[in-house]
Length: 298
Image: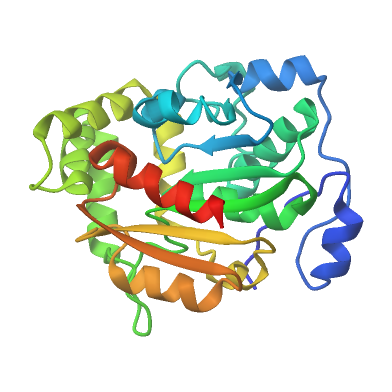
């Protein structure tokens, strides 16, 4: 079991009974007024329909990364979009390195947003590290969520003897080193790496711009957490039906990772799209929407 310690929401008794050996405690996570929580994370809620869908961005991105999906989704769902502290329109003054030293701080933000809006039965969508944050949120506060959709998910991005996560430790060290020296060069390199050569170069430029817009010091800490967090032990505790949407030829979440998650998440379904790269909501929005709708229609 890894060392994530995530305070539980008001449904903590249910989670504690279902997963007694998880390292979570039952304190209420809401310490701020609802209005302060919504301002901190620049929360927006819009769309029609009774079902709520909440979207968790990947590393370094703001909620605008979902633009190719939200027009269609907003005709059927009430969408909840937000920014991680340090990105987009979030409150930079709310960033405290101790709170965000692990994924637990970001998970806590997700749960607090759900509490502030009094949400239940939410379809939670996450991309990349956002999928890990979403996964941990469903474990920490299961009363808020009904389904999990994980786009290009990976519980651990590193390669080990018995696990192929995509990146060697040397690769990660080089990327993190470049990030400290030249943030803009790193942003362009990493975006090209994630999207791959087969996708439109404009998509890489768009993704790089998201990386460039993030606060550089906060992004560096979040990058360390993203690459080095290991959530593999938690996958067995995901309590709700889960759709894994993987891409072909994804350097950050290769096919081996999709197979690993399918084998370890209890109620998982895996769909592999024809698009390449690590960002299906950018490179193949229609395919991604179809996969999501087919899953939720069942």
